[in-house]
Image 1 (cartoon, helix red, strand yellow):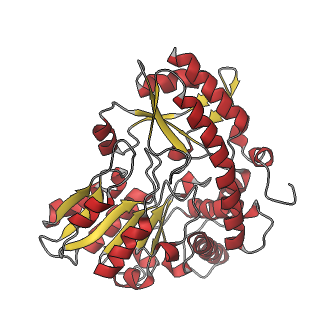
Image 2: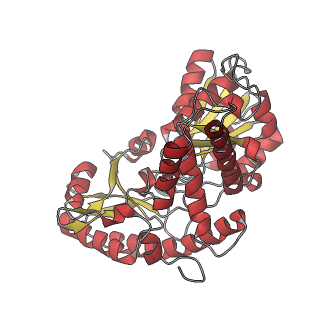
Length: 406
């Protein structure tokens, strides 16, 4: 690799999936917002764990002790990734499962009639767990509006919905459907001032913006390593004091200490090993020894590269007759994920036709069902830019869209 951060070409060489052909074309993966491809470093870490260290935890023999060490290393890696302490990192199967679990725990301490704020802009993983809790316990759900024209959350409406009964505000750091980056700090300033708990869905945000939970000043922040080059798993940050006192459902013999007290049953150790390797992969691309500093370097470079590609893609798409793009413009606060429609084609049919050219995109509502309903659409076509996306793939996508839009 070069003396500076790895080039896109060098990075592409680390991903075996990029050597795949489909229908006579090299595959270009634009489905990163739903799950990225993984480098050899990640799969090797998972294979190494399963082949040589596979065991359950906390027993007095080598592979068990090695598993303990691997999990401890993973907590340390994600503590650097999120800028927190290792004992504030909780692992789980996915963000949705973690959210249901935390919602149930929080709900045990509230009173009937207490209120929870969610938003119309979010993935339903940060809506439905709270709605289910409200239905079971007699809590009140209030939903914050967004502007369908700009994709921006209505912060004035959010402030107007807050009352003395508000116990929690659940909001996404970035929209997985429209790409909007929300002003989380303005929201957490309110929650801190009013003693309200903040639960941040960082799944769409974490692949593109290096998270700093101290700067965001949030109470809980969830993300998914499979969106940033790792395996399918979930990671939750929680303030230590909050994790220590959450009334979580747990087995009597299980650990009573945070963060393990939130982790039910035996975790997917190989996925956690792979998730830590994804963080190490991102750090390894920069010529900096400190893991956090290396991550900052990598993310800063990725942002510059992806912004150039995204501006080009957005501009070209907006010039194609019959194509409509949704969400903030490239100059606004957003991630490099574009959602669009093609006149005369459903989102599914458009993606099926594009796949014949080796262009893999996702379609539908992406579990952001309320967004699609507010836009009055059957679904969206979504293209995301990842660290391995290059200009040639962007140009292939533009050509493919022009072809099927006719």
